[in-house]
Length: 313
Image (tube, rainbow, N blue to C red; front, top):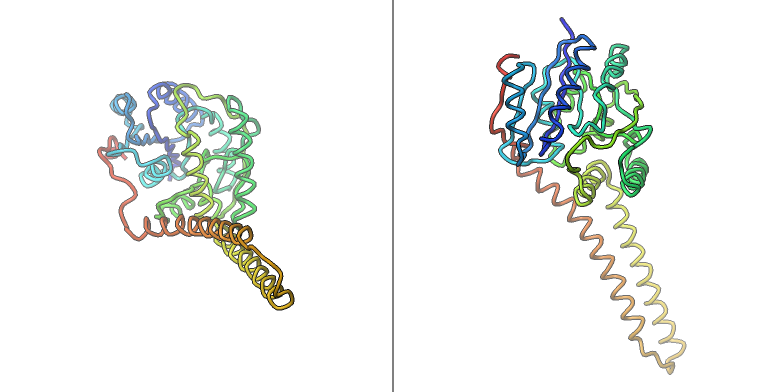
């Protein structure tokens, strides 16, 4: 059986980069000399991304298209690509060209050596703000501390995965997805390939601060129950503090019955402290309950509006 590689590319308003993306991807894959397919997943783009993707599909039947009925999010778009991919190995890469397509050649070499997952590790991050670099480093280090998953540091979704790994991922239908954590969870032989992350080729980032925070929350809450334990710890702390106030009040009442205690300051502080902790713990519980609610509804992960060139597989 001949080797085949699938390249999955999620697209959301990427009209500024799609021409360069396709050119560099095809050049790299043809240099490797392997049968390939490029799966473009249009995640409800509002610019000319869908139109340009269709034009490429009409010119080349090795380029395939999945177009969503609306925007479902980056991780769901990648999931749709994995569902459709037929290759012996699948590469995930973003469209912005910050992750150079040329690195795929080195990934294929490692895959042929027997590694089931070859992930891209960023030795340097060019064109990113100091804030983004620092917060990314902090998140991945915190993630490793709070979860049993040994997720590699300074990585993204840019990686090559063997068909065995992809099959396992396709069996996991959770909705709040954190794919780089899921890939680490399934295991198999994994190795890194270092590269310098480039500035974005064109267009605007699709991960502003709000989406970065939501993505980090999905990752942490999907793989760790530590926040629940922290909330339990706050509850125990409140109990100890409350017992301390009770003991103090009883001692003063018994031993110093004539001692004047106004009591308003201590009561005020205790009520605020306990109330604040309760709000925090209820909020943490709410995050987990909200994710349970998403799961039990049992809706499909995405809705496809149209597909192109899959009949030629």
